[in-house]
Length: 549
Image 1 (cartoon, rainbow, N blue to C red):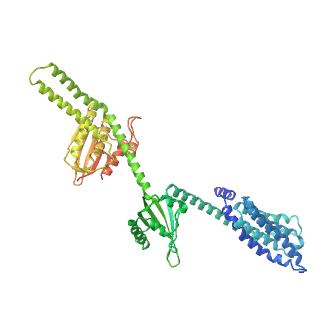
Image 2 (image 1 turned 45 degrees about the vertical axis):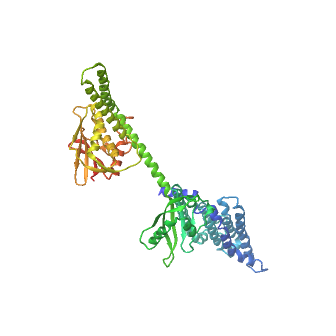
Image 3 (image 1 turned 135 degrees about the vertical axis):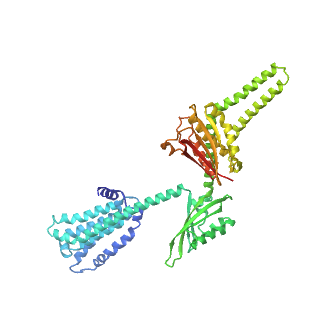
């Protein structure tokens, strides 16, 4: 109750159902009503010696002048002085007329109800021209002034005042409630329109309205800007729209409207090209609905929006570029974690080559050169294999191309790449049940998933007793699973909830990007598969599922 009252007061003090200019435009209409109401008094006062009522009509004229004077002042000053009280001057004039009728004893005795009519005029004027604030003020004065005057003038009886004002009380209460509701509704409507305009402006949508009776089409400013035109450079007509649509897309657009009109689709939606001012074609998505019909059921107005689809295409391209950067940064982060093992693995064959070279220089035995040369060839091949594997893994490609690949080969190459890291961390890699299964995939993308999963497992079990990572394959009729299971005992529930969220990591700052699992799942889904965490046989496991060719 208290909150409602506070809201009421706030609306009363701060809001109005219409803007100042909207109310100012109603001054001429309200003035016409006032002239018609007081015109008989102006006419009759011109008749000489009209009789006993001539004095009363003079009083009517005197009071009426305050009302009409209020209108004159309001019209003159409201052009420059944008204050609500200026528009209420006619209402104050009618209020003074009511006061004059009450305090003039002879007039009040002869015409005891005329002051009530003046009060009703006050209510009409303030309701039409005033804000809610001034409605409250003037209705308060209307109610209290006659009551106060009854204590000062003997000819004004309080009981008569209350009885004669009963209708004023009722109308006053109704008016306050009406204006209050209008104020609130108007404010809500303005807020809605502001939000709608904000959404339209921020969403880059152009709007149009097609009058199906006159064939006139109204295009808003943004609609024209999409095609490179200023406000006045395109005439609002259906013919202009038709000229700008690509000839190959015109029939498609018309067919979409016909389908909507016949009820085949719930709303109009079509993609077509429109000619930009500089000559290139802009891809447009147009959506619309008919919101108004005449009494015979014929559509009147067709309203809709235009969206420059090239903006969306650019955003999608930007997102893909950012995704590629994130994928590459994730690869580099994984490579950094593998660096120590890779360096160790390269140093071993380099040491062999160095020793072999020394042996060649010092030995003259037959067969030694051939044997040493073979060792050097094997070591060089091993280094080459490591470097090529790393080059393939860190390759940046914006071409997501799926082709038939042997999953066994991908898994084997991944294990060769990762084994250096596993050895350096004393983690045993256990291949199990690897099978020749063909899948339609980008081999580098799938390898990235496997490297990330196996590398994570190695890190979690590094330097622990009897630690291992098992890589297993299971094939069904339509799917193949690659299961990365390790010697860990599972993951905490609180971590599982966020496991695949971007940038979520349980590692120390600088040790992980938090993108690996998120990117890996995204890649799996792009391939029509999935990536999930499971607890298998009491051990931590990640299951990559892919469709079989």
